[in-house]
Length: 426
Image (cartoon, one colour):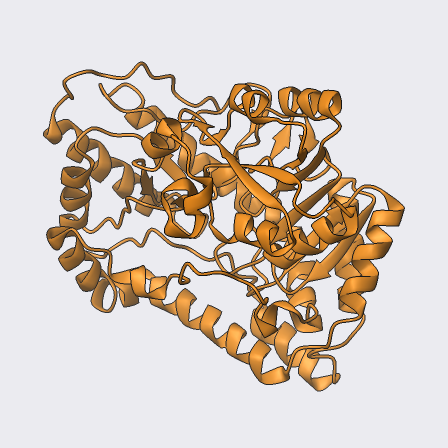
């Protein structure tokens, strides 16, 4: 019988339930010493000066912006291809958002577009290491230095990625990390603000320390939701529960999981759960999982490189770029293909779940109508297809994914105009 493979795979510590139970037994489910221990271990792993836990990665970003004390109404530049929440949080912090296009080969902010967008009102830039590939930080930092811009790295997808041997999150004035269920480090929610300068870090710390602790029920519900997602994406369960819906969606050109995605909306005032602290049980899970991060990343990279070798020579296919000075952690493996709708249907019929949209082309959203710009690179990049390479896949499952996708691409035939491609290097 065919067993379906989900595009999603959460990284879960094998003793998660024991860690949660131990926190409860000690009366440290919400408050406890693991928060500080996790912050210290996280900073040490990056080689960063200061790390402060937050309720979300997005709120870590918001508090960094507050602490930098940028003039209200000043401009902050973000890539056109990103999760809509990040620019909306910048607007909630009193800044004017300006978007710039991305390089469609890397999905990352284009330094040339950044240089053209800088004005006398620009005060900050947000390099987003999208899907796990670092931006061209040398070029971005050079521009930032010349124009006196603050740099806040968006590392939500990229924990463990490196640029010229150095961890992302350590190049700018600050950085945000996310610990949502499907991110590289799963704490079932939460985030981290990483800050270079002590005075700025002190302001972030004071702001977060002034917030209330979350209710136990809210955190328990997050743990339960994460556990259900993990069960739901297991091959045997997914085959009978989720895959039939996705299969029907692929035939109809719909995305059944769209109803689960966060509604695009203004975030002023900030929702109540944003303005809470990071819980001890989540920190305990993060602290334990740091020891497994390198192994998970190695497995994901191995799967991604095998897929790139298999697909890289097919006309019209552009596999994810991995320039020599950058280490990609493949939070998502996104490949540009011809006849993508046909590829999705073909893979789904063979039990491999793929997807056609992952993040937002923000200038196309009504929420950012006032900041609309042409963004052909982002529009092209957004047409890429996500193929599963997550660490929870076995080698046998990955071989099946690779075979199914390659056969589907070969069956679809070449495009009218093939793209010049370069396979990712291990």
